[in-house]
Image 1 (cartoon, helix red, strand yellow):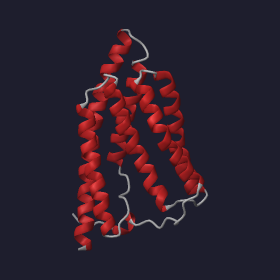
Image 2 (cartoon, one colour):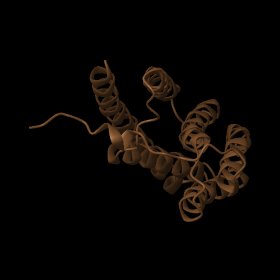
Image 3 (cartoon, one colour):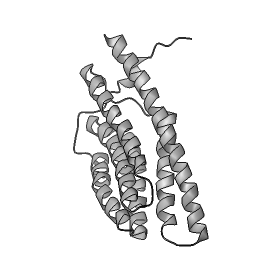
Length: 199
């Protein structure tokens, strides 16, 4: 089995521009994150779901616009994953403050993202951009976000159905944390392979 990694796939050639529509949308998504966190922490779940829905819609729009109108930029490649990470961390923190999930989930996810931040800095020292998102990473993020949204929905009511939905969502969230860390291990393997080849 050939373990050599084609480094060209990690070195896209985005435009060196800042003021684009996708970047503006990504910035708005980042600005919406503290609003979502405050609403969740204060158990104002219906407004939180509305803002979260708009944030999710913008997540798909910025990438589509960037590719369609040739507005892929270096800063955009950083803003998008930053927005995803901030949304996950702030959602866990808010749900923890609201007493909906255990705070250990925040610690575990935050440790993973901290290590990923170190990896990005190490790759930047060797002129590599962020690693492309793999299927495992997308799955972990999707599981976590599905769990968060379902936990928010379950908190709207106080009945047997809502309690059952809460337990199911919590289980999905725990699986999401595991897959999230698995993706992190894959990214580290890829990243250190690139650094080793560059050295």
